[in-house]
Length: 145
Image (cartoon, rainbow, N blue to C red; front, top):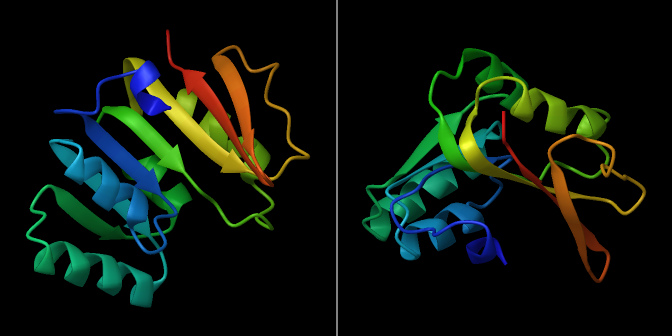
């Protein structure tokens, strides 16, 4: 699905709410030049780090941090930002504006947000499409400043 929007090879990607790191591993395996995995839970962050080490994925950098704090401090521009927040998180509706207005994406960059079905982001100026796979919803945004 992502390759319709951008070639994954040689991109800089940001994986927010990384969990076990599966998105990061997949992006690295498809040729991403760097993936920053942001995860607040220390056990999950250690798991991602040790898995990346054992798979010799030097392109995967783990940052143990609160996502919102990370976004405030971040100075890197990414080609792709993927966010899979906890479905009960109260700030899900705020994520598109935080990512799309905070100089996180390069022009033409893609933001993918996984979210529960009750959210509708179609009114966002950068919204491209929403896809549903079972109970999982993805909203895609293309940053064109």
